[in-house]
Length: 204
Image 1 (spheres, rainbow, N blue to C red):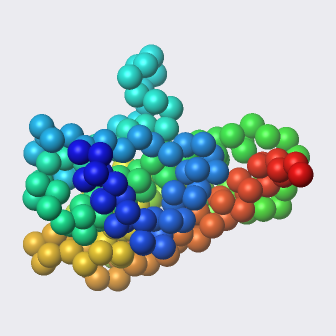
Image 2 (cartoon, rainbow, N blue to C red; image 1 turned 90 degrees about the horizontal axis):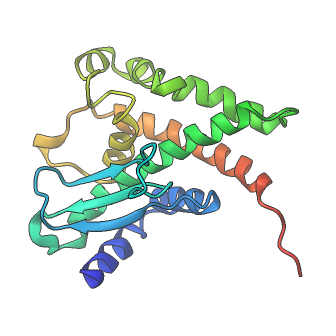
C-alpha cells in the first residue's frame, strides 16, 4: 500500500495547482494525512476535518482514497487527491481568515486577503454559491445542495479545471469550473503571501 500511495502522490505532485495548495498547507503546518482505505467503495475519496473532542482526527484532517480501479493507474486517482486536498485548503483559508479577524493592526495585504475571502468564500461558505451564480445562475440554483454548495464547489472547480472529466461527470457548464478555480487560486496566492509574513526568517 505504501508503494501504491507513493506512486499516486508522485503523479498528482506534477500538477502546478496541487503544488501551490500543498506549499500553502505546509507553510501553515497543516498538511493532512493521506491514507488508502481499501474497504470503502462508495466514493472516490473523502476529507475528514478534525471534530471537537475526537482525538483520532489530527488537526490538519485526513484524506482517504477509497478502493476504485484497484489503483492500477495513478493518473486515475490524481483528480481525487487534488479534490480532497482542496477541501483541506479551504479549511485552512477559513482558519487563516478567522485568525486575522482577531489580529489588531492588520497590514494592507491582510486586509486585502480578508476582503477577497469575504467576496469569494464568506462566513461558513455563504458566498460560494452566489459567486457561481455570477457564471451560471441556473447551475448555481440547481446544484445549491451539493455541486455548487459551500462545501463542494471549490474542490470540484479545481479538480475539473485541471483534469478532463468523462461526459457523465461534467456537471457544470464548461466555463464555470475554470472561472471559479481562477478566483480560488488568486485568493490562495494572496493567502500564501500573508502566511509568508508570519514565518520568521531562518537564522544563519
